[in-house]
Length: 192
Length: 298
Image (cartoon, rainbow over all chains, first blue to last red; front, side, top):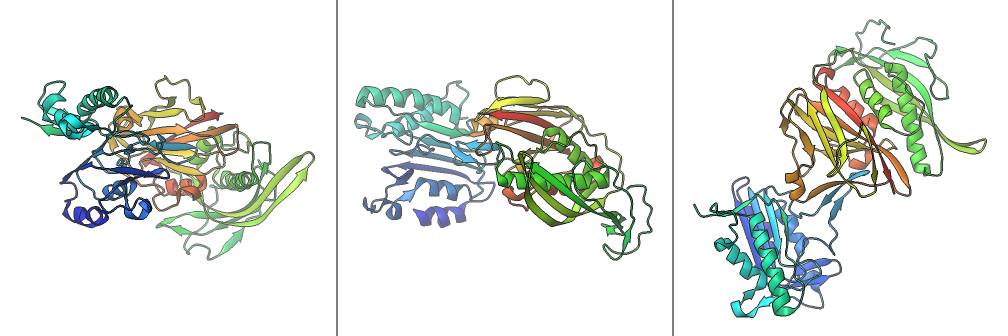
């Protein structure tokens, strides 16, 4: 994964032209205050060296100068903040509070299936992660609230938040709150 | 000092003429001596004046030794510039309040320290007070008197997010979210700096996340605006470490040309004097500024 994002993706992106879309559905594991993707060869006893830090993915993406980036992660503990605390960049005495890990990358948006402390549920009946199911359902047209033939990140956020949280309580009796940060006017799909 | 007429042919520091003039005013204690140098800066004849000045700072309950040292140094610098360039002195306050910074920035159109040497640096007990003294030898570049341009702020406010502005100062609680609003009479680029009471400057806008765009005449500038806030960026205020109350300043500069101030300096090292030096390199009719004071309480 490291090699793919650091080298392959970077080499294929045309600065200012390419629109990058990254979707991950799989296991996520916490280690200390950080979340990691769990590749098939993850060693649970050595997560730091065999997992791929979510933070590392954002660092690589901030560096590729694409026209736009959309990231969707359906994994446990995938929230963009460490324990709910936003990234603070000191410019003392006025400081920046940054809740979007891809703020530096222009026109970017990040969808995560749950907060940094929550489990992301599986939707048995649909054979998808709960978040993935409603993410795809929204993109298919259900999220087009104003019926203008376009689905923005903001519209998809409303669709996911309502349905994922509701179904997680009904099916699993647990809280699952997807998080969406970034440029919510970004048009994700256009049907015209 | 601007009445001095010296034939200027040689390069900087080639010869020295001790003038032996009396010190015009002494807002801070300490010795004062003046020397004028012939200088040629960027193709225009410019005077460099050598001044020795002492700055002091009282170590109060809310002041750490490091802060007192920085304040004493900055007060010495301020005194040197004021004496050389004729800045208006409003008070001998030892913290960088917004009026003081406003005066200093205005003076950068007339003079700036190009070199300095620290002659002494000591802590003394004066009665019940502990005072930090710093003595410097500053070389102040006197710039040609230029007329101010037509660029001016129609509005400049600092507000707690979601509220309305009250006057040209504000009081916040630690961790309050703030917004900066401004309007200018001509098309211009906006630059925002935060200045702590120790004189350290932090660049707020433009920054690594948002580029400076040309703002149209009379259009409202809001930072961060709703789009930027929704994208995951907020501006908040904090207190200097260990203090229960802090008085800080926001400096807004509008420039006709696109500029990248403080681009090559580390954020923690830039003082108000450094910023003045950069501003002085830009012709004064090409920029204007507004300072806004605010207080942060725990």
